[in-house]
Image: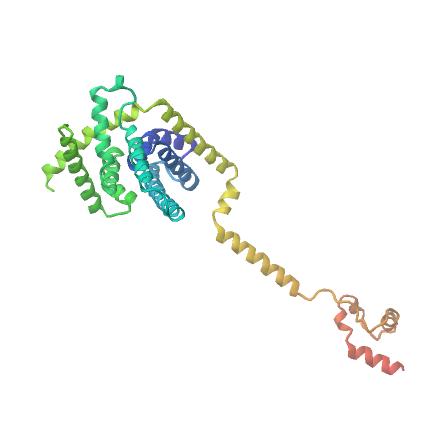
Length: 187
Length: 130
């Protein structure tokens, strides 16, 4: 069983990457923070008594579920909003979408012009390409290569077969290479 | 996908992941602080869980609680259905019963079990006396 200190260290080690996972999927800073918090709470409430070795896989599974839940809730919310306000102006919808897209890309670009060094631009392009990947490909890539889970663990976390994980990761890498090449970055 | 493709893909992936790691290290301080706050809240919840562990552990097993409640109800029903100490038959006056006991018409055990005082034996005694 993991001690409180071990859980704290684990969360401290993983929280920033978890935030980025959520941000690439959701494109909203505050929603990403909420999703990470929900995942942390769920981990400590339901799996606080598990061995520390099991925490990474459990946490990422919870995080992926929390991200999916976010989209499910957003879908239900949108349904009711549209139902309640049928006379809503179409132009208003378009404006909101553009605003949210603009807000979503804020995280990928350096905060100030002074920080726009080539490394940051490179990172921003990689993050943008990542966020544009299909959901399953992005999850497979992040879990396999960024989190360092093996194929079996990734499959368990994503709830799919190991073959699917290999396919998704390979397609993700190819898609990223293609996108980055279009942006002028050689893989 | 052949082995060369896989190796090339992994090389590219490692390069991009290194860049992502750099990005994570350079997160804005406000974001780091927000994440820290959220982690503290989660850890506080964990500590609270350890303090009230028994209650929380029980509340996570509603089946156990339901079984306990059913068992308690069963015991209550069983106790309620048991024959309790009977009252003296209402048909007897208090003096009559004392007389019957003193004359040996009724056994002394009736004090422990009033069911021994049946309507038949009382009526028989009363008829004989009259």
